[in-house]
Image (tube, rainbow, N blue to C red):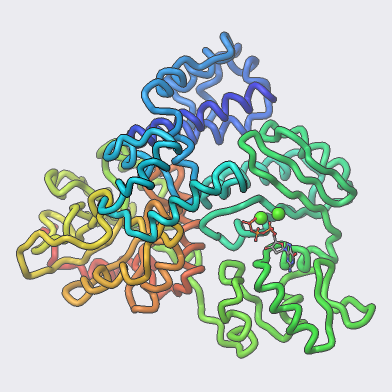
Length: 543
Ligand code: DGT
Ligand code: CA
Ligand code: CA
């Protein structure tokens, strides 16, 4: 449905523009609506005529009104209004690799930079030097990204790519004659940024699969179609490769197209040493295929235990697998709860019941509800017995001392641009500390040495570093997280600052923690509720 595709693009742009204005929560509501619309196969005009737009998930009154407006007039005037409030060039800056809305917004607010050309001038005049959070490396990366802009197509943040892929997989499963469909490539490895999507399917009718795929509302152009492969471009320019393979080769194809390239090159040389050949069709001894249906089979044929996709980067994982010494990695079911749920994001105490239900659905035992220091933990009601246990996190912007007032633990949210901890001054640090929202991303210029002062906080108190689905802009990327794990610090994984309906995204953060080599023992919210309650007991009000 071309109309739907345009509306989806409009809602995504509104979300980006609101992000640039520093508006909280609303951008996510528009993205959620955009995602639901992508899954709608019926004509929106008919749904609207029945007065049922609000039955689309994520579509409330305000968004339903905008859809109706669009159907009537072909435009959404609200888009023009928010466009009018933000210089258009900021969107371009925001979409440079490694730089999201926060960085673009700071350049705008603090330096008055309104587009790529002004950014170029500001860089040349060294006006970024000395700006908090803009080290020499970050500035160099920004300059390089700017120089490349317009050339190579940009890479998407993991969460955005995942969202798109999920909608494509769901549409294929629902509408195409496929048996298996899986995503491969960098997305399956949970790389922080994704260049293009790689999807694999098995089917007895590949032509029909490609027909259904090409007709999806998300797809703008078909670039190439062959007997087993189709390449398309989505409305926003993202490329997707869809391949249909035979079931006997599915494991080999999944392995091959998951990569990484370096990992595959190393595997092929290992195979050669054993007199074998490995490609996307299987592992072969001469003409005979000795493995191919599953990945486990492919790795076993090469004398290896199965290597998790997230660590297939040729950084020692093949040697470890050969020696049977792959470390255990954290997995989704290991997670026992969340530790960073903002009360105001839930819509206050009233939303707590919904959050509790969402937590139960995910099998979690506890929720760490986070409130601002000024408001105090006393405002967090407890839940009825049988629901998840509520811990209270008290959010602060500087390294706190003393115990969190009315809470169980501190949540440190460094003020924007702060990359090294600043203390409140008073000595006597106590109270466990969750270090959240730290934009520690190598792509954005965060250097390994910059983690040291944060790690040093652990001499006074238990600390954990947050890893979210928005890695890079929000939380540690997997490279920095790996450094934290190797230094013995704990991670805390979570979906990021999103509504309870989006909590499934915690799985992306789990993927990043896996890339970081974290096992269950390295993750704070993999610990059982009794453990946390015991170690935090006496640190808060009783009762
Ligand atoms: P991306 O798309 O840039 O985020 O990264 P990938 O890893 O998804 O790369 P992509 O889409 O070019 O290819 C998917 C996988 O297919 C890649 O990880 C490994 C495999 N592959 C593609 N081309 C080659 C190649 O020339 N040699 C080898 N060994 N593997 C390849
Ligand atoms: Ca790819
Ligand atoms: Ca590809």
